[in-house]
Image (cartoon, rainbow, N blue to C red; front, side, top):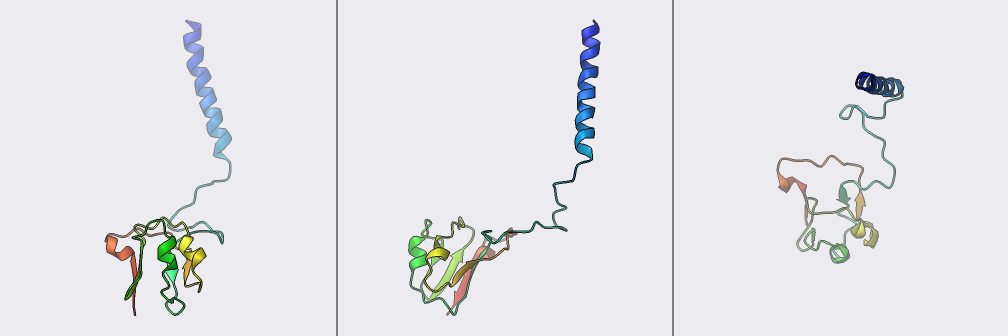
Length: 120
């Protein structure tokens, strides 16, 4: 009888201790849309390219694990909806035409907005 009375009080005190212990610590979460986390230089965000540097050699297309992600022809295009952001295309580009940006908010309503095209 006494144990059934003491156990809930003991658990209540343990819970209050946890709340008080963590209640005065520095917050680790950010107020996301207003405050954004600082990204380091190795962050792999949206892929972008410099049209003037691209010679359409096809190396980026060949080293991509998803062969349909990068298309080279009369139009150079990268489909970011299929891209896994592995960085193979960027590391192997002989002219440094491709690079990662720090843009990570890639949600769009239309999937076609994630296709980067450049007409030549």
